[in-house]
Amino acid sequence: QVQLTESGGGLVQAGGSLRLSCAASGSTFSRMGWFRQAPGKEREFVAGFTWSGGSTNYADSVKGRFTISRDSAKNTLFLQMNSLKPEDTAVYYCAAKTLFSGTFNYWGQGTQVTVSS
Image 1 (cartoon, rainbow, N blue to C red):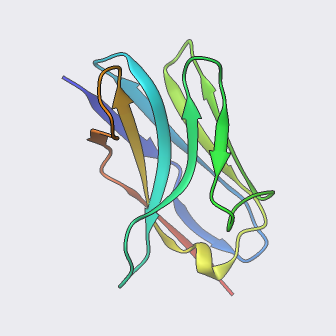
Image 2: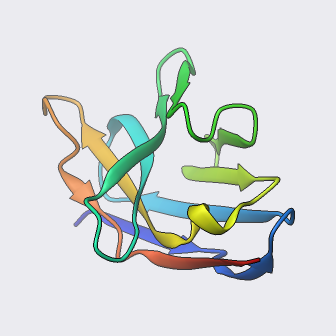
C-alpha cells in the first residue's frame, strides 16, 4: 500500500521560511514532486525530483526561492521554501510516480501553507 505523508506546513510571515516533508512508503518511485493549489485556482506544479540521478526542476514562480531534495535512506522528499510570498499561500501536495506510470499516480493528503503579508 502506497502512502505519502506530508508535514511541515503552517503560518509564516512574508519573507520567512518553511520546510515541507513527504515520507513515502509502499513502492519504488521513479519521480516525486510537489504541487500546490490555491483557493479558486487549479493545482499547479511546483518542483520535481527524479529518483535516479537526482535531477530537479522548478516552476518559474519558485526558482531561486524553493529547493527540492531527498533523503534516500528514509525515502523522504523535502521542499525548502525561502523568501515566502503571500501568493505562495496554498495547499501543498506531495506526488509520486511509480516505475511504469506515465504520470504522477499517487498523492498525499496535502498540507496548508499560509503566508501573511
